[in-house]
Image (cartoon, rainbow, N blue to C red; front, top):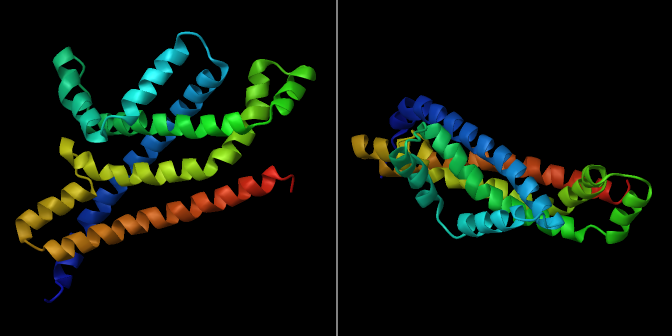
Amino acid sequence: MNFDWNFVVTSLPLYEKAAWLTLKLALAGIALSLVIGLLCSIILYFKIKVMDIIVQAYIELSRNTPLLVQIFFLYFGLPKLGLKMSESTCAVIGLAFLGGSYMAEAFRSGIEAVSKTQIESGVSIGLSKIQVVRYVIVPQAFSISMPSLSANCIFLLKETSILGAISIMDLTNLTKDLIGMYYTTFEALTMLVVIYLIMILPLSFVLSLIERKVRYAEFGN
Protein backbone atom coordinates (compact mmCIF):
# COMPACT_ATOMS: atom_id res chain seq x y z
CA MET A 1 0.00 0.00 0.00
CA ASN A 2 1.37 3.38 -1.04
CA PHE A 3 0.99 6.31 1.31
CA ASP A 4 -0.73 9.22 -0.46
CA TRP A 5 1.52 12.19 0.39
CA ASN A 6 -0.41 14.39 -2.03
CA PHE A 7 -3.49 13.99 0.16
CA VAL A 8 -1.44 14.98 3.23
CA VAL A 9 -0.15 18.16 1.59
CA THR A 10 -3.59 19.09 0.21
CA SER A 11 -5.50 18.48 3.45
CA LEU A 12 -2.93 19.91 5.85
CA PRO A 13 -4.49 23.44 5.91
CA LEU A 14 -7.84 21.89 6.77
CA TYR A 15 -6.30 19.90 9.60
CA GLU A 16 -4.51 22.97 10.88
CA LYS A 17 -7.77 24.94 11.02
CA ALA A 18 -9.58 22.07 12.74
CA ALA A 19 -6.72 21.63 15.21
CA TRP A 20 -6.84 25.28 16.29
CA LEU A 21 -10.60 25.06 16.77
CA THR A 22 -10.27 21.85 18.78
CA LEU A 23 -7.52 23.35 20.93
CA LYS A 24 -9.46 26.57 21.61
CA LEU A 25 -12.57 24.67 22.67
CA ALA A 26 -10.52 22.35 24.87
CA LEU A 27 -8.63 25.15 26.62
CA ALA A 28 -11.83 27.11 27.24
CA GLY A 29 -13.48 24.01 28.70
CA ILE A 30 -10.45 23.23 30.86
CA ALA A 31 -10.27 26.80 32.22
CA LEU A 32 -13.96 26.79 33.15
CA SER A 33 -13.76 23.32 34.65
CA LEU A 34 -10.90 24.41 36.93
CA VAL A 35 -12.96 27.32 38.23
CA ILE A 36 -16.05 25.13 38.69
CA GLY A 37 -14.02 22.41 40.38
CA LEU A 38 -12.35 24.79 42.83
CA LEU A 39 -15.65 26.43 43.82
CA CYS A 40 -17.38 23.07 44.25
CA SER A 41 -14.55 21.66 46.36
CA ILE A 42 -14.61 24.69 48.67
CA ILE A 43 -18.39 24.38 49.07
CA LEU A 44 -18.04 20.69 49.95
CA TYR A 45 -15.12 21.30 52.32
CA PHE A 46 -16.94 23.95 54.33
CA LYS A 47 -20.26 22.06 54.06
CA ILE A 48 -22.25 25.14 53.02
CA LYS A 49 -25.88 24.25 53.61
CA VAL A 50 -28.07 23.48 50.60
CA MET A 51 -25.26 24.34 48.20
CA ASP A 52 -23.28 21.26 49.20
CA ILE A 53 -26.27 19.07 48.33
CA ILE A 54 -26.57 20.77 44.94
CA VAL A 55 -22.84 20.29 44.30
CA GLN A 56 -22.98 16.61 45.27
CA ALA A 57 -25.94 16.09 42.93
CA TYR A 58 -24.08 17.87 40.13
CA ILE A 59 -20.96 15.74 40.61
CA GLU A 60 -22.96 12.51 40.55
CA LEU A 61 -24.91 13.58 37.46
CA SER A 62 -21.84 14.77 35.61
CA ARG A 63 -19.58 11.81 36.39
CA ASN A 64 -22.24 9.18 35.71
CA THR A 65 -23.48 10.38 32.32
CA PRO A 66 -21.50 10.34 29.05
CA LEU A 67 -20.24 13.62 27.61
CA LEU A 68 -21.99 12.82 24.34
CA VAL A 69 -25.35 12.65 26.12
CA GLN A 70 -24.64 15.91 27.95
CA ILE A 71 -23.75 17.71 24.72
CA PHE A 72 -26.82 16.30 22.95
CA PHE A 73 -28.97 17.62 25.81
CA LEU A 74 -27.40 21.09 25.51
CA TYR A 75 -27.60 21.23 21.72
CA PHE A 76 -30.87 19.39 20.97
CA GLY A 77 -32.73 19.40 24.29
CA LEU A 78 -32.42 22.97 25.57
CA PRO A 79 -33.82 24.56 22.34
CA LYS A 80 -37.09 22.74 23.15
CA LEU A 81 -37.16 24.85 26.31
CA GLY A 82 -36.42 28.04 24.38
CA LEU A 83 -32.69 28.19 25.10
CA LYS A 84 -30.59 27.86 21.96
CA MET A 85 -26.80 28.10 21.92
CA SER A 86 -24.18 27.83 19.21
CA GLU A 87 -22.29 24.60 18.64
CA SER A 88 -19.08 26.02 20.13
CA THR A 89 -20.88 27.30 23.23
CA CYS A 90 -22.50 23.90 23.79
CA ALA A 91 -19.11 22.23 23.37
CA VAL A 92 -17.37 24.46 25.92
CA ILE A 93 -20.22 24.18 28.43
CA GLY A 94 -20.31 20.40 27.97
CA LEU A 95 -16.57 20.06 28.55
CA ALA A 96 -16.74 22.37 31.56
CA PHE A 97 -19.76 20.52 32.98
CA LEU A 98 -18.00 17.18 32.75
CA GLY A 99 -14.54 18.44 33.70
CA GLY A 100 -15.80 20.49 36.64
CA SER A 101 -16.90 17.38 38.52
CA TYR A 102 -13.55 15.66 38.02
CA MET A 103 -11.66 18.80 38.97
CA ALA A 104 -13.84 19.15 42.08
CA GLU A 105 -12.89 15.67 43.26
CA ALA A 106 -9.21 16.34 42.54
CA PHE A 107 -9.27 19.63 44.45
CA ARG A 108 -11.27 18.07 47.30
CA SER A 109 -8.66 15.38 47.83
CA GLY A 110 -5.98 18.08 47.90
CA ILE A 111 -7.90 20.27 50.33
CA GLU A 112 -8.55 17.37 52.69
CA ALA A 113 -4.81 16.60 52.67
CA VAL A 114 -3.94 20.06 54.03
CA SER A 115 -2.94 19.80 57.67
CA LYS A 116 -5.60 20.96 60.13
CA THR A 117 -2.90 22.60 62.24
CA GLN A 118 -1.97 24.90 59.37
CA ILE A 119 -5.58 25.97 58.96
CA GLU A 120 -5.90 26.53 62.69
CA SER A 121 -2.64 28.49 62.68
CA GLY A 122 -4.00 30.75 59.95
CA VAL A 123 -7.13 31.41 61.99
CA SER A 124 -5.08 32.02 65.15
CA ILE A 125 -3.05 34.81 63.53
CA GLY A 126 -6.24 36.62 62.54
CA LEU A 127 -6.86 35.47 58.98
CA SER A 128 -10.47 35.47 57.88
CA LYS A 129 -12.05 32.36 56.39
CA ILE A 130 -11.57 33.74 52.88
CA GLN A 131 -7.92 34.56 53.60
CA VAL A 132 -7.33 31.08 55.01
CA VAL A 133 -8.75 29.60 51.80
CA ARG A 134 -6.70 31.92 49.59
CA TYR A 135 -3.34 31.85 51.36
CA VAL A 136 -3.30 28.53 53.23
CA ILE A 137 -5.65 25.97 51.70
CA VAL A 138 -5.71 26.64 47.96
CA PRO A 139 -1.93 26.86 47.33
CA GLN A 140 -1.26 23.59 49.14
CA ALA A 141 -4.32 21.86 47.71
CA PHE A 142 -3.27 22.89 44.21
CA SER A 143 0.20 21.42 44.74
CA ILE A 144 -1.15 18.13 46.08
CA SER A 145 -3.85 17.88 43.41
CA MET A 146 -1.63 18.73 40.47
CA PRO A 147 -1.14 15.16 39.17
CA SER A 148 -4.91 14.58 39.10
CA LEU A 149 -5.57 18.00 37.59
CA SER A 150 -3.02 17.32 34.85
CA ALA A 151 -4.63 13.99 34.03
CA ASN A 152 -8.05 15.66 33.86
CA CYS A 153 -6.77 18.36 31.50
CA ILE A 154 -5.41 15.77 29.09
CA PHE A 155 -8.61 13.76 29.44
CA LEU A 156 -10.72 16.78 28.45
CA LEU A 157 -8.53 17.51 25.43
CA LYS A 158 -9.02 13.95 24.22
CA GLU A 159 -12.77 14.16 24.87
CA THR A 160 -13.02 16.83 22.16
CA SER A 161 -12.99 13.95 19.69
CA ILE A 162 -16.77 13.58 20.08
CA LEU A 163 -17.65 17.25 19.44
CA GLY A 164 -18.24 16.51 15.78
CA ALA A 165 -21.53 14.92 16.87
CA ILE A 166 -23.01 18.43 17.00
CA SER A 167 -21.60 19.53 13.64
CA ILE A 168 -18.40 21.13 14.92
CA MET A 169 -15.65 20.74 12.35
CA ASP A 170 -13.11 19.44 14.81
CA LEU A 171 -10.29 17.05 13.95
CA THR A 172 -12.36 13.89 14.19
CA ASN A 173 -15.27 15.26 12.18
CA LEU A 174 -12.92 16.58 9.50
CA THR A 175 -11.20 13.19 9.28
CA LYS A 176 -14.53 11.42 8.88
CA ASP A 177 -15.57 13.81 6.09
CA LEU A 178 -12.26 13.44 4.24
CA ILE A 179 -12.46 9.65 4.43
CA GLY A 180 -15.99 9.81 3.03
CA MET A 181 -14.94 12.02 0.14
CA TYR A 182 -11.54 10.58 -0.82
CA TYR A 183 -11.48 7.08 0.76
CA THR A 184 -8.01 7.79 2.15
CA THR A 185 -8.70 6.06 5.44
CA PHE A 186 -5.14 5.24 6.47
CA GLU A 187 -3.72 8.66 5.55
CA ALA A 188 -6.53 10.60 7.22
CA LEU A 189 -6.40 8.56 10.42
CA THR A 190 -2.62 8.83 10.52
CA MET A 191 -2.85 12.60 10.32
CA LEU A 192 -5.50 12.58 13.04
CA VAL A 193 -3.25 10.59 15.38
CA VAL A 194 -0.18 12.71 14.64
CA ILE A 195 -1.98 16.03 15.19
CA TYR A 196 -3.51 14.86 18.46
CA LEU A 197 -0.03 13.83 19.58
CA ILE A 198 1.32 17.23 18.55
CA MET A 199 -1.31 18.87 20.78
CA ILE A 200 -1.23 16.48 23.73
CA LEU A 201 2.50 15.85 24.15
CA PRO A 202 3.46 19.54 24.65
CA LEU A 203 0.52 19.97 27.04
CA SER A 204 1.64 16.90 28.96
CA PHE A 205 5.20 18.25 29.12
CA VAL A 206 4.06 21.69 30.36
CA LEU A 207 1.78 20.15 32.99
CA SER A 208 4.60 17.86 34.16
CA LEU A 209 6.90 20.87 34.43
CA ILE A 210 4.31 22.78 36.48
CA GLU A 211 3.81 19.72 38.67
CA ARG A 212 7.53 19.50 39.42
CA LYS A 213 7.70 23.23 40.14
CA VAL A 214 4.80 23.26 42.59
CA ARG A 215 5.98 20.09 44.30
CA TYR A 216 9.47 21.58 44.61
CA ALA A 217 8.04 24.75 46.16
CA GLU A 218 5.90 22.71 48.54
CA PHE A 219 8.96 21.54 50.41
CA GLY A 220 10.14 25.09 51.04
CA ASN A 221 12.78 25.30 48.29
